[in-house]
Image (tube, rainbow, N blue to C red; front, side, top):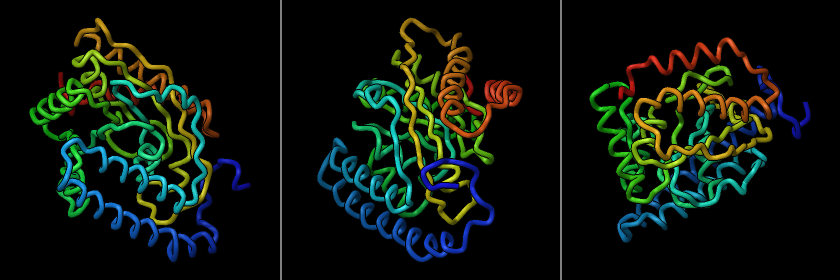
Length: 276
């Protein structure tokens, strides 16, 4: 397979890719993360609006994408105009966050699992940079977490969230939780569907070696929520999942498993993790 095309990740990876990843790419990613993270923590001592921290995060992200060997292409970048919205994207890899930070040309906050805030260094940065934790394990805490995210939106800060709540294990979309729809309707802001293609092949879940491939971020049309009520959270979640699935499978070598997608949606809507 040519490095200019996206296809299934080789198993096992060629020996030279494993060696390059272990000896160069992975150490570079860890080193740059420590360096930029330190600068970000330092900047947090002197600012309150997070602008410099976000600029540092964008530079960190672009360096990591290059260090990982990915070649990034954005489809419909004109849809990434700064606007108050919930930006929702499928979740395939640890590299998703750097790709998004390096691609979105405006300041935003990430909505992520609360577990990450417990990690040394990473948790410190998330807390100091104003990112938004969400607890998907405790129903009562979930409502409080989502309310905090809504306040962030109403304060004028766009949010980025992964509706699946975790990384895909096979490259296909996993069940969607209804948190993004809940936040968008409560704040009466649009949802912008986005699809990442290629990060699963670059660095899938539980993998420690990178496989350089083209990575694509496809941006869909914003979905308006003005006038919608909480009764329409489930239908909005379905509309969001359909939009992201259409973007993803349009640009992926994978075929869309229609029956599995419907089952995943039903499982996501039935999940008690993010109650209304």
